[in-house]
Length: 406
Image (cartoon, rainbow, N blue to C red; front, side, top):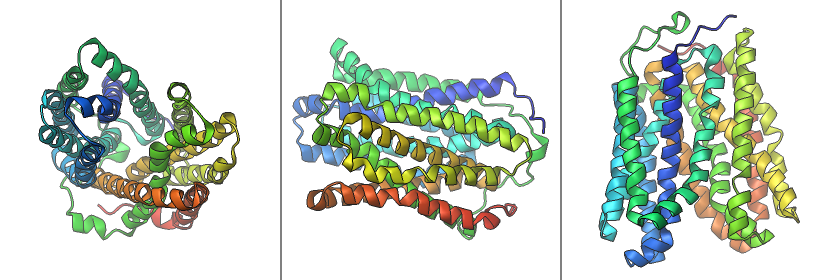
């Protein structure tokens, strides 16, 4: 099967998406990096800091759903420009904040604007890349989040030391406004891939979308698998310091390794998946087999707590990071494979909100469990989730392979 030729604009938009994704993760990291500075400057307590986190996460969950609906109704040109512009304005205003209340309002605006980028990316990839080339192109975006998280500490620190903490918010905000403008100018005249041309253009009601059993299946899978990654993001840096004795400096060098390897694994998986799709194998089947192969590796995470040195721990953590990132990437692909373009962003938003809610729950439960029984119960429990989700998807292959309702 010969894949359609891609124009230069597709690759330009992919580059802009990379920048937007990088900025998305960099901007959300700025507050945590400047925590100690802001506590002194604005006379904040740890309780105040927890309220700032809640001010971000509350709207983040809600607007994951609303953002997806806006993408399906407004299209990606308007919606992604709007989301990127709003969270960039929130960053600029954060740098201008003089009180705790002002900073809280800015964090809430950031949390409302940022999640809409991910449903928008789903629709962009469906619009500008044919299914035969989509997985590899999509996989190239995965490192943007990792790069954003890696660049945040040195970049924020350098800007703060060179100028002030205010500029650490303002400079990325100005860059984001520029990216939003560039996106609005560039996202126009999309290609028309005949094989995937769809007649419906009206976004179906949310009630209609939720009547589809396939949506509920993917929601269940996302609820089962996302908590593993959220736990790794929130708890493993502390685990490596407290249990294996890493210093903060060592963590800065070694901590990004699992994310980097996970991103590389996604690129390899995307390239491999495209090869099989071009051979005529169903994209849905390719994704599910990929999930099953990676799920076999997930139980390794149960043994993390038994690692006696940093090398062994990093190997296990990196394997789990590969599983998590390929599943996250693959589930977005699965939405594009199964559902029509006029509802894909809404469904991606529902999945993202479900995953974020699972992250909130695991982070709330993990603390008491670790205090009472240590890390072992948490690691063992999380190691079972991807295999269970893989079994669920494998048994549901006939359901997922049915044509999407138009």
